[in-house]
Length: 270
Ligand SMILES: NC(=O)c1ccc[n+]([C@@H]2O[C@H](COP(=O)([O-])OP(=O)(O)OC[C@H]3O[C@@H](n4cnc5c(N)ncnc54)[C@H](O)[C@@H]3O)[C@@H](O)[C@H]2O)c1
Image (cartoon, rainbow, N blue to C red; front, side, top):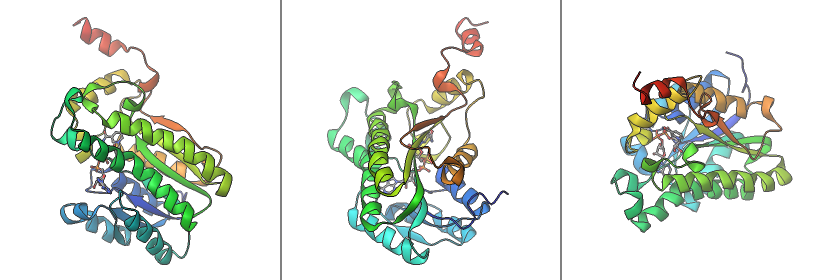
């Protein structure tokens, strides 16, 4: 490995099981020389496999519901105790929609669930950044990444109100990127990842269709979770110090492809 993150410390939210993108990021951070704490919602600690990951990474697991300010404050305080001060990087890899889980169509949503989706999947990012800034828990030139999806920019019907959550998430990266950049030179970006087979991803209606369509449209094919982890590492490294407030597509070229020969053949049934 390249010791890209040698001596760096961080907090990784959202590793549930070994399919999770955050799980792959944690393993790669370890390989590149970082030390970090792991966090997930209390319920996820009970039914997920995060303890297994913690053993591999020699990392402490700190429970935090990303919608609860006390939990987040405790997580940052404890992480700073364990890691000897402010951290260099934070990964927000959190998403959940009860409407998606219950298969409620976009035109017949439960709005209490809608609010919960926004709170967990987007406002949590603001909560995390606001807490980090208040506690001065991220070092100068630190890097924060959240994971997004192209439904923030273009409509994918089965993605439901998660589209609004991702649009808000990307907007928070821009707005907070300004304030945190000015105050502490901390950079904040979102990575818009290809459809990926994980617990959250597979809950989306017609997910196999999304996956196949994106793969056929992308000149380089879909980006895998492992490749997404590599991109996150680059964003945490010192090689991207002036990249901030961006939504970075990591999708094999999907976002800028209008049509591919593979899809054309399929439509014309060649
Ligand atoms: N899988 C995909 O196709 C895909 C594509 C683009 C972006 N993403 C995004 O990547 C991120 C990670 O998802 P994943 O695909 O690895 O699935 P995942 O299910 O492994 O991860 C989602 C995580 O969110 C956590 N979470 C849910 N509610 C929470 C709460 N209240 N507090 C704290 N954590 C909570 C879950 O416990 C889980 O660990 C999400 O933001 C997702 O939207 C996924």
